Length: 189
Image (tube, rainbow, N blue to C red; front, side, top):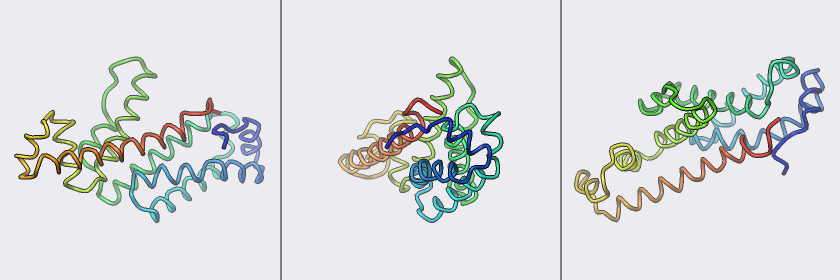
């Protein structure tokens, strides 16, 4: 499937063309749903949140002809914010993930933007991992502890720690692959 969408479709959407909305919906809905599902870890919540996003797309359609320069970026930001809000409402967002939302800039604007977005996605994904996996990942990556020290601290075998880290990294790769494929491939719109 082509990852970008014809700007003429977005223009028609902004003019209230329902068939253009259908094209946008069919193009983005599955990818937005998958992105949100991987963050919130719930098909039902992902479905509700994704539906809300597309209701807002229709309600705000007039702005796409004037105010929104990249529909892909717009829908990504809506999706990210909706996933964060869903996690906040459920009480399932950790302080580390919250911190990533508001971290200060320290490089070029574009580099900082993508780095913060990636870090936010990572932290949101980590906070949704099973408790032991999350603790092991945080001890390894955020506290700099080696596998043996983690194993000793948590009274686990080193192999168990390694297995949890492997699964955590596999999950992160999966989420980041979806994140990149949905929102950053295809040249934007």
